[in-house]
Image (cartoon, rainbow, N blue to C red; front, side, top):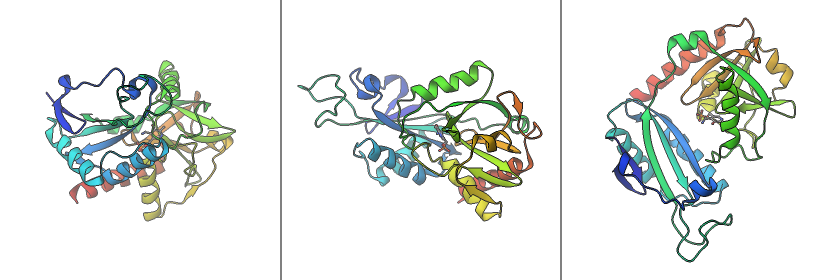
Length: 288
Ligand code: PMP
């Protein structure tokens, strides 16, 4: 039985318990991270922990641990699993109110401790065949709030919009807000126009993906032109290539958008080049 890390202890997954009064359960009051782990090495762990800090700051919840404790616990969690490639979830909620306080109240409870959970699942990165086929996506008006830069566990809009895509056998819903691309329901979006990458600049309307940052770093390092600024709906719809990026999907070409082929209708050359650079980069980082 694989173990999870719950409130500072490693416990068997089927013995891990959280109170029904936890604010994560009752109010969706918490934040999370998903870290890809290759051969038991967390990829870009410090960047994920920095984003966790940004999310905690955004919901005004003190970080329960310093970086060293996080790093040590997550490495140990990864080492304790019986599979080597992992998708590691970290979740911190505002916990359970102390006795004498309302069991469920929107306002923050006084005192009390957060609930801290981390667990690992097997990670299955996309296969070469999947990357060579690409995926379809749909678009929708972005129904979310004004702090999409925070990785919060209250994901109702993302859940519904991702399901809208799955219902029509698509992989993702791409959000548009006021005529501009924001991101996908669970990914960032890049477009390629005339050999140049275009993607929205980080803002409160999107999550700054760890993969997004890696892609932009690799583009800069390898001389692929990139424009980080507004992408209009017209630019999205007339792009030569569209990709979704995330820690688990990596760089996945979108070949159909709202039933219309993207560019040639097949994964494009820039996606292939970026995927090769990304795979190489992963290997180099893991070799240290
Ligand atoms: N945006 C949203 C809304 C997401 O859920 C994700 C996946 N975590 C991303 C972007 C991509 O982020 P990352 O590259 O860090 O996985």
